[in-house]
Length: 144
Image (cartoon, rainbow, N blue to C red):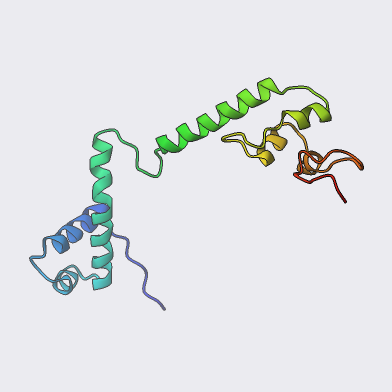
């Protein structure tokens, strides 16, 4: 039958990893002395090195970088939402024709696609002109 896996306490792992980091002995010598495979010593050493930064961050009350929201990204999102909110406040509750007139293709931050989405207007409705209509929005010259 196979050999059972040994479970090591954190105390032993940290002791072995610290010895490996110090470099007083080779990893093979440490592994032989502790009766552990050399690969396991290397793994514990790398885990200790990677986790060292978190120890100091926790002391100062900082969250790990993965949990901390990116401030610039949040401010960018808030700005975009404010622009969209202002756009909607001005352009609420109107007919399809009025909505088409409200869309500004030269808006500095909202694309035509996003403006149509915010007004609950399909883009094709904005671009397609009725037969015999004027082609001012589509950029056509009115000739067939």
